[in-house]
Length: 166
Image (cartoon, rainbow, N blue to C red; front, side):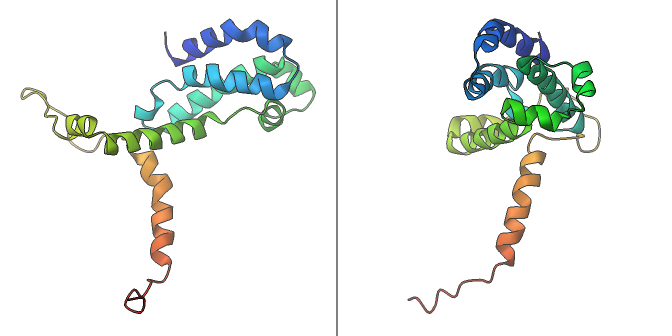
C-alpha cells in the first residue's frame, strides 16, 4: 500500500468520528494528527520534486474535500476554490509539514553521530555501476532552496566590529 492508500485507510478509520464532530478545530486537529503523518510517512527522505508535490497536494485536497463533505461537482456549482476549502477546514499544509520534517531529520542526522557515520562512511558495492551525471534531485536540494536565501540575507548585513567591545 502506498502513501495514498495509507492516507485513505487512516481516514477511513476516523471518518465516522469526524462526521459527528461539529467543531472545526477538533476535526482539523484529529485529521492533522492521524492522516497527515500517514500521507507524509518517510517524506523527510524524499526529494521534493514537482511530481511529488503535486501527488501530495492532490491527495490531500481529496481528503480535505471528503472531510468537509464536498465533492468537485458541488464545489464548481458554488464557485469554490481549493483556497476556500482550506480556509473552511483549517488543515495544515502538507508541503510545509514535509519541509519541517526534513529540517528535523537533517538536525537529527547532525546530532546523532551513529546515523551520520553510517551515511557518510557508506561505500557502494564494487560491482555497482551508476549512470554518469548528477541524480535528477536529491533530498537535501529542498533544504538548500529554503535555507540559501537566509544565508544570503545574513551576509548582506554589515559585519560587527568586535575590536571595540574588548
